[in-house]
Image 1 (tube, rainbow, N blue to C red):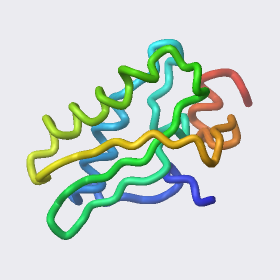
Image 2: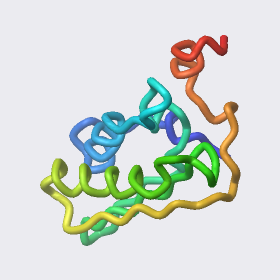
Image 3: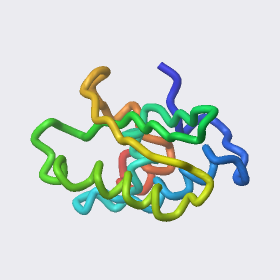
Length: 112
């Protein structure tokens, strides 16, 4: 699986703007943004400028399971003016592992 945080996004593109917003979202228990954590699996922008974000959480029992995905969706809708809509879907396959984290995230958490 290609890790999304390893892709390059043009900052002026809708995808780049969506990723920039996602990088402002944090799990309150972890001092690393959810994009660098590897929790965002896909950002799709349709021809009609509808955004679909596919993400996961560190575990199904994550205390922010009910609040973090709506926060991501709300922030994207509020901050990326060019889009028509945004939907965030939480998936559990593939399951998240620490291997999905960026090197920077691992350094921040003392894992390297």
